[in-house]
Length: 328
Image (cartoon, rainbow, N blue to C red; front, side, top):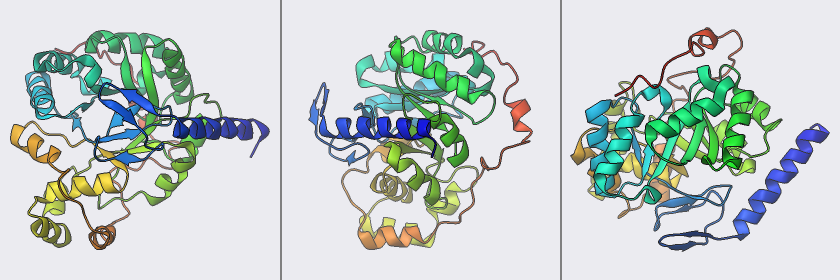
């Protein structure tokens, strides 16, 4: 490890220890949870900057305009307080309308959004545009969406936004060990969250262990399988049997598994009944034996490969300029 890397790592560890010993005040009280520890009673996790983040929310990748607005309204009125979006989803304005319509105060809603690679080199402008589309004064968690383009410059831009009060927490999406390490070689703020594909079929053991020393929390996309795997997962005999034993649905078992493995889950849905179902997972617990049975389901193969990216054609396609303001 180089001298610079050693100094950075030492700073990170000091931050982690300080925030572990501190407590975070919220409108509903004080949490004494350690960094990265899930508080299932409060439904939150303590990030490495001391901020509390909800551990179960709503993903909005395939939701547009009125559908996105309605889903946000349903989620927030159900009790969900975590909303995940991205510039490239083209629904940030609709999400803003859904939040306002719900009557839930801005301070109660934790908003994740993501910068697309085409905007990394002009992150300041991209962040300001995002704030306007969401119609908020700050973003709770901002991620670099993909490990393409000038992601180092993009990360530096996010750090500036934190210092300016425009962003509260920052992190990465779809970054693995090599590019995560590259970010850490220049970072002054360690990633609070890493968002990657993670579910009972894709356990991502190596990267989960890799991020622990930084206090970085895992956030799962495709938490219920995604891309044709959802019904396969729901009908899996192990998951179905566990669901029957608890009087729960397969979706509820999978989402409960996420929380018990320390993974923030953001299942997407436009169905109010499914949204309510997904959030009703705090009244049961999977046993150690059930967790072990689910552990055997790992297939070790992701839907998208974000390792060994040198020469990947997505370098070009993901960095083509796009107008994210062209949304309803």
